[in-house]
Length: 291
Image 1 (cartoon, rainbow, N blue to C red):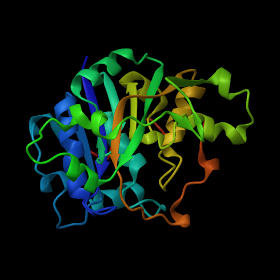
Image 2: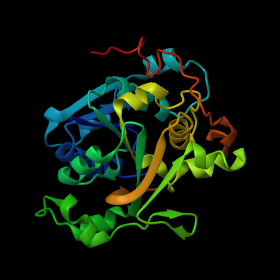
Image 3: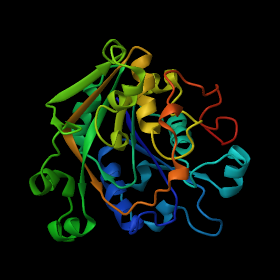
Image 4: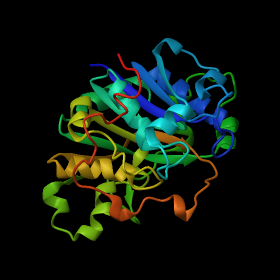
């Protein structure tokens, strides 16, 4: 069973120290996954794509897809969108990943060791998305904990930093929490966005069979601003009759950073859709080359 990671970014130093954070994260992915698909979206003309500026091992597993500013203009036009439009970039990666299992993750998330990832991949059911609860860590603490002589940091992260409790609001849930259509439809629709998230910051490690992501057509491409896109893809899984399960094992670690958030750049909670509005060419299938 082949397992692919899909992540995206822009060479813009988002949040500060992006290159350093991405080096930790991508090297962990290249150790654990069979394939890592990185989509570089809208890096300024004249700059390298992000991964070209990083010191990475196992580059033979890395598949890069470059979406230039000119291509972005052609794809999005004048529609309001993030400069690093995650829903579009993620869908480009999902459609071109070759794994039986696809993990949507981020370029600043240190993933589990290969052995733990393989157990997780075997565990996820065809109609299920498993979502891992992240623990935030500081880059400076990572520096202090692991000198350059320590190479296998994934193995030792839980010993140094612990494991984040699985939480919804202030209530600790363990060891897993699952949400289905039968569960969510018992509640008023205005509560669905919270219930569909299952865990806080649900978009850092979403594990699903490729066929399920094809069925629901990935992330909603109408949600080109910030917020609710990660919840919406889980909502679509649930409302299609599937299950979203949150768990805190194996643990993942998000290297925290500053955030640049403006109210005008947010998707509305009401932009969530129970069923896809993407057409058959989602993931820029006709706009960007594919194998």
